[in-house]
Length: 74
Image (cartoon, rainbow, N blue to C red):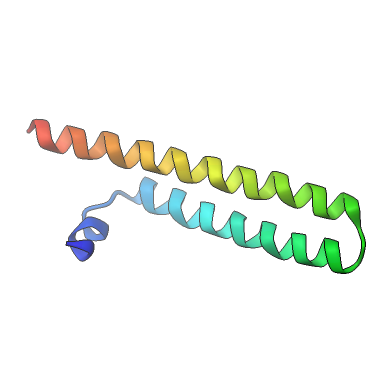
């Protein structure tokens, strides 16, 4: 079932998912770098990057949910 889920997903959904994962990963790396170098500004900025990644993830879930609902109506 997981293979079918990903195979039937739109390019928009896949782009949102990978963008969200990338932003969250970059945010985590920035957090580590900011905290190890005692750069509070970088550590704070990393939270915004992680937050943006989480927002993109939620948008992706909404997009996928709408696509599934449209598919069920057919």
